[in-house]
Image (cartoon, rainbow, N blue to C red; front, side):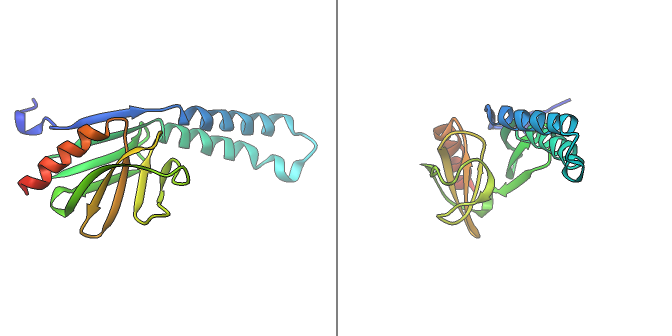
Length: 155
């Protein structure tokens, strides 16, 4: 049974078509492994690459941002390969922003410094932490920023 203290104050899952690109690439690599019969040295590489692309597609199907009491969990899924936990007491400031086109999608360092966790689009919440900066891509930047500002003021 869930009590009120276990219900997250903030929970949002963003879905995006990025996984469709990855599923398409996986399908192409699997087909290449089946149809490229006259190139034995490289033929064996295509099926494992295709399977890896399938796993990555499922890992980047959506991006969930969920309050967990004293911290914020950011995870891609449904295959939970990538998870980031941000303690609210580590947050210095929060603002809405936009990622650069060069920032792209996925998990990586930004050319402006700090980490980017983004699934789709350019809207984000810029979280300045005691140790670094984190840009969280979201399709509801105002709501997430407002929630984090409220958590920052209470800690």
